[in-house]
Every structure is written in C-alpha cells, then in structure tokens.
Image (cartoon, rainbow, N blue to C red; front, side, top):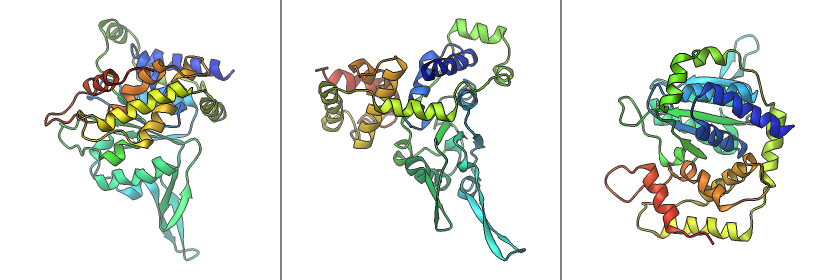
Length: 305
C-alpha cells in the first residue's frame, strides 16, 4: 500500500516535470529522509514547478513564500498584535506554520531573513516574542535558488546551506523531453488536475521505514572513510561535518527504500552523494568549483571495502 502510493506520487511528478526522473527520485529521497531540499538553477527550467508539484502530490498543507529583498523575519514567523478588545497581545502565526514551505528564490532576501529559517529547519520549532512554538509534523522546506552571479542575490552562508540535506539542479531538458513539452499542455495547467498520491500519515510511516533499512559494518566503514578523506585531503577547504555524515546515511537509506530494499549497498551512498555533499564541499582553489569535480575527487579517493 505505502510503496504503491509512493510510486504513484513519483509517476505523477514525472508527468509534469519531463525528462528529470533522477532529480525527482532524489527529491523524494530527501523528503523520506526528513531532509530539506534546495533546488539551484537558472530561471525558467522548472524549479518552482517541481516544488509546487511535490506539494500537491504529498497531500500536505503548504504555503509558497516569494523571497524578496524587503522580506522581514516576522513575515515568515508571525508576530504578536495588540488587541484593544481584551488589552492583550495575540500571536498571529506566519506561513512557517504549514507542513511544507516553498521558499521561492531564497537567495534574493537578506541574510537576516534567511537566518530566521535556521531554528525551524534544524529543530522544527521557532522562537517568537520569547516563546518557543513547535511546528507541524511533518515539516519540510523546499527552496529554489538562482545562480549567485545574478544581480540582486545574497549567497546563502555555510550554516544555512548545511541545513539543506540535498541540493539538486534540473538543467535544460533533453531534446525529446523538450519536444514533448512544446507539443503538450502547459505543466501549470496539468498541475490543476493533480490529486494527492500520499497522505501525511503514509509519509510518516515511510519515514519510519527508512530508519529500519539495515547498514552493515562494512558499509559504515565505507561511509567513515569518505568522511575522513574529505577532512584529511588538501582538495577541500573544509571536510564534511558529522551532521553531513548522518544526513548522507539517512539519504542512502531512503534511496534503498526507493529501490525496494531493506539493506544498504555502496551504490546507494554513491547515488545520493552528489546531492548531499556537493553544496557542502568547496575545492581548495581560488576559482569556483563544479559540483561534479568535487564529488569525483571524493569518490575516486576512497575505495569500496
């Protein structure tokens, strides 16, 4: 039942986002691993469409937030407003109190507003007016980001990037997928007819199932060798943190579940590695690094046990 619903949700997304099966599976893998997803690419390739499609098929309460330079933390979290009737302050929750947040163009807002998401993404709670308030369960942030060289963008700091379990790029469609896109119906019209393929209850059950995927000692050795290599080699400015290691293991378990297995293989780690570590590692060079180069140096530097 759960597996069939999951596959139906993936198929529904593939009918909207054409030719991007790998990226769609990585997005579902991220959500099953209880992670937050960053979609980074140039405008017009379907970042927001993918985020909206995921919100539709997952059956979660969702809110899209358009990040702009004048957006304030209170616009995300909410604020207390004085009520004359009872002479008391009444808290009005912001859009962060939905189950799924679509943070569109997150790097177009100021670092002050970006930092308002840190506590929410890490601890699933926010502190407003001195009071800590829990967020809904499940809680996801799916953010889109334009290339940082574009005007009007504020690069996400390392602490913010580390809160995203995965970062993926869509890229241009291949010629066959682009022809189908040009000949077919507008994806935005198709989204209007999407139905919920999953429920929050099923999603929570699948997340629990991810935790039961078995990881052997040899597989954990391979993971630790990858982490150690990233810290000891001179290729990278900084190595992977323990949080990145735990995230990589969760993502690999989710990938194994998508492959309908209850045990981990080295191929599972390799499948999710680019999306999990590409935005966390920087090559020790003056020029910006390509994510593919970063991952290639990491994979080639560690042998499978």
